[in-house]
Image (cartoon, rainbow, N blue to C red; front, side, top):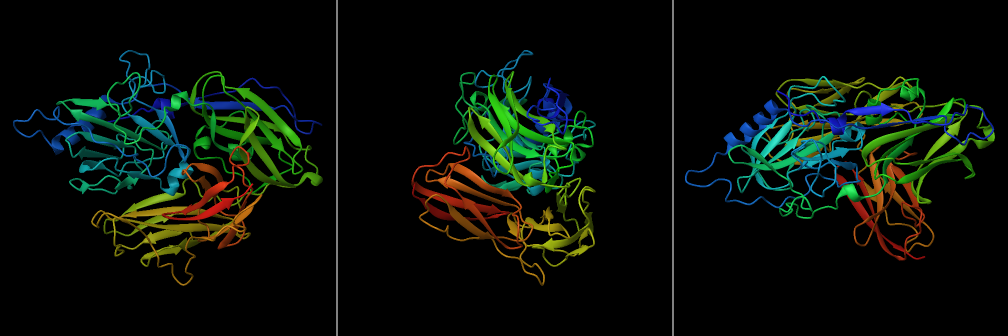
Length: 579
């Protein structure tokens, strides 16, 4: 039985844009040599047999009480956001409920931000690398867990699909129901019959079943006695009250924004920039530590969402900030979710005098909205990259369990080490073993393993252990063996109050992914200073802030907050800015 064919989210049609030709080594390689777009295609959503299985699982869990007109007499709960992080913080809103009974598409706001027949809300992670880190799904309302499926394969990018998906069905306290679909393999963290409050961890985002993107399909409804979907979003095409405690703005009316961007190489694309498999976008291309001047091309990708007529410019800047290459592009149609890539001539165009730190930036209406930097040298160097995945969930069952780590051949040989691991978990070469006698205190436990090359470059494997027999809750292991790891810490900004710039110093465990961002007094994100593995040093790091927002504009004088997050921990510090 199959539930989803999430084709509009997951089936990607590729085509090459018309682009001017320019070869490597020319004097002014300003025009791109080639380009392409990968974007969703429309298609059906729910397979009837699997849909019916979910209906039966929820209905049998709590049948109507005798003598009641159940559930017509009850109201739906007020839903909290069902994810640990919000939109544009690793997530893109891809599909709403389709209200049009014909082959046309009409979402709650009279737009077409859905696909024909879609019955839920699809909230999609930028890529599978984020899925590996373990993005948490939280119960949006209190209720009783009706049914769970946890052991189906995930990381799908196309057919053939698994017969079903990992999911959690919750019967809300008023008798209505909520579905959480496509969870990560083994990462469901609740049991049938458990009564859970809102905000309970119920699993991690995955791509199981008929899915080819890491995403959550969130759906609510009631049994009358058949299943009737209830769109939680209120708008011109859905007069029912919003079910959200705080309804977010409609994304179908929001102009162009860039979710992600990066530089990659021809080798990282499989050797042919005009013909490579779209899952490489979903896995996020392996980025070079150093882009060699001997590379034939310099490719850049963007992941974006926008409306017809929205335009952007990409610029590649030398270390002295002079322009090396650019391209201007205008979206021909509404674009709920896609990747664009462009490449320019490179070999022969970069003399040794230009080695150093280059930048790629995106401008919208002549304002810089996103920038990334990369190092250029004589030859390309890659750091470690765990493949085909960098995350794994174990589900304890009384047996010895193992996981073998692998790294991309593009990098150098590595050695492996465990991080924040408890006793009972061992490492031999690249094999992590959890003993049959291993025990933990709470339902979920997290630890990491690090792959590090001789130069100290590292990638992290994110491990999650579920013991369904333990009380609900989460813990990070603290028994790290002889070499105990540093706890996350954020020192006060210096100078503070700050003038034109200030420095933020922090410490974290080696090989740990860190997000360091600046927020204003209203809690709005102003700028992300770091989202990845810190460079340099094993424990202590420093990042400067020049008092500018993500668009490169100086922010007003006032009180700001630096917030750092790593794993389950976070710290914050005040920054007084004086312009």
